View (cartoon, rainbow over the protein chains, first blue to last red):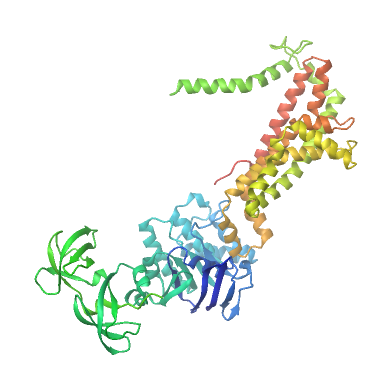
Length: 353
Length: 260
């Protein structure tokens, strides 16, 4: 299996730096997501790993060997495209056989490998179908099978679920993740969907403007975002203004805000007296009937969506909050409420770079 | 028949398009001595005359030969030009397109005269078939180009990338992925080229050498002095030949986009 090391990788188009000196080490068998808005350089990075784009600077190493000058057809990668890119004039079998024929695999082994992989993606019995006779989800699985049957060094996926409907997308997330674990293949997954990146990855690489904003486990990214931009990209977030009143130890401060004085964690260094921004996830907040302590406010809007209810709260101090609760608490629009936020729901943001 | 007016309209259009052909075919079975419709009695005598007419037989062979050669050359050049146009022309795309379509836009007679000057200027002359074949290639090229570039525009570049990631080199990708997928365009373009070449008059008329008349020219020559149903028989045979080419290519090579 394969370890991938990307070192100061850069891609320039004219004077624009689409990818600006990024470095990532991907462990053998690891599932990494490149997450970011469109134009952040994630797809360009993937294409450079695949060999479809030439790197302007930097190195891409597979098990220590620089592959920057190896053409795509010799890199031994499996790639899954957003539109699946199945060959329309070939049956499922022929699509899967193509990569094996290129590797001059003998017929009996070819057949057994195809059968095994089709079984793995639960498409046994679909061998003779043409791609246009399959549903979107099935085509997606054929594309996955075609990439895996050649037993590549690494698996690259470029927004593979973007064209599926919401329900199927959630099924496929789990399906791909389970399959990847079973095969144990090093995987790079490009997406702009934070929920997708979170559920599937071992680590998430958040990218903005061609640079890496943060690399970390999904919980790291979500609970301890590097800066405001990351916090806002990976989920809904409330921003609460505060002032540092004391620094206990490196990365831990006391901050006074509308929720009182609390001890919070931070990645950045702050000095007493600094004006800071605290992030507070909507689901960390608890609502109680008015007059039960905490910050006081009024419900301005309520959106019911089955498993959760979204509230917009206008605090008496002037700030607006976005709150998510389970539907067992019934509060109506216009009600006055007490807003409680536990200290560990806060995170002290560093300034955006 | 839910829409009688539309149906009637369509029938009239078809009648307008097909009636002349039916008249010619009908007239060719004439037993009389003159080209008239309806025929005066039914007979195959004019077909017999035609098939025994060496001049016509030679002309039909010339026509088929020129059309076949021109189609192959046009097919190859036109496909390559379309590939360049769609994939590499970049900011020259529009220029390339106009240049490729120019033979369609110019009056054929001008193209023919220009070519005639040209073949004499460079010393080829009209003693060989080179000039005429070149002319046929020139006027059939746009049809191949249009058809192939249309099918290339719907060729998804990610198919090529997928094939690359699976380990296919450039030639294999062209042979196994691109060519099969643009085949309908290539064959459609080649068919157009064949029919246009088989049918063209002006270019052949200007560039033909002695004894190298094509069928349309021989027919024109014939009609200047004769007005027998043999002319209708010649036309019918020419129509049938064209149909045979279309049907055979469709069956053998598969003009339709099958399955996808």
